[in-house]
Length: 289
Image 1 (cartoon, rainbow, N blue to C red):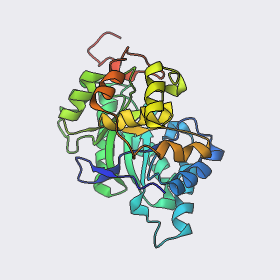
Image 2 (cartoon, rainbow, N blue to C red; image 1 turned 135 degrees about the vertical axis):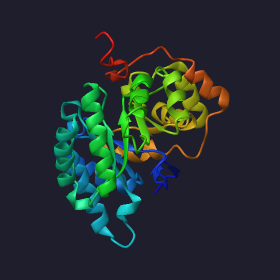
Image 3 (cartoon, rainbow, N blue to C red; image 1 turned 90 degrees about the horizontal axis):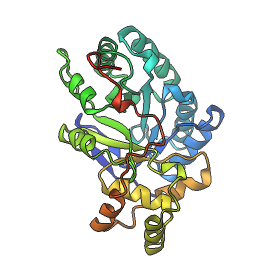
Image 4 (spheres, rainbow, N blue to C red; image 1 turned 180 degrees about the vertical axis):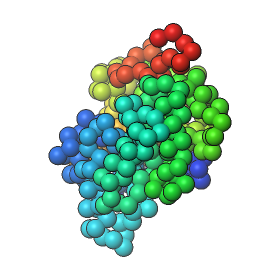
């Protein structure tokens, strides 16, 4: 089994440097994948209220812990969920968060809650952050962060008059064809770690000649090369799979590193290509929509 290293968040807590994403994982399959992922070596599991599989992921974690309570420790697992756009605002977030906590009851607490995207308005985003800060103070949530936030959204958050906790994470779609250089640089400069979702380009770029060539050089698959690229860029990649047989292969990326020029070769493919949504461009209240 692979042991995944951790890195420190600006909260002082630690997070594994590679995780397992649960977007599009069916709710009736999530517990099985979560359990199998933990058995394979994953320790960071990324769910969301909008995915409809929080309960299953928590059940899978609980099953793994119950299997060997002396060795399988809750504190060794990092469980993430998110507040969806429709639940922005102080009261709505409190209610949604309680729902997520209820689903996480078998594992006791949530390690990280992200604002799923900035798509609401100033008052609602502000209220959501206030509610999340309170959850950290109460101890039910250990860390808070954001997802799909552009530079302007981060600056707005930093200017909240009652800001007590900065985001620990900004989770973004990132891969060689979407490098978001300026946003990544700004996020890191503020001490916020970048997580990369859809790091495998939904398999749309697996036939890229340079990717194939690097795969042959290192004896790795295109997916493994893309995960390694994310790691070498300093991101926390969150590859997802609903196939248990691929769980181990996506972890088999710690026995090599890309050369600096190879990282640059892949990064040079940037064409602002998005395979998902892009809320990073969502206008602030004083901008034209």
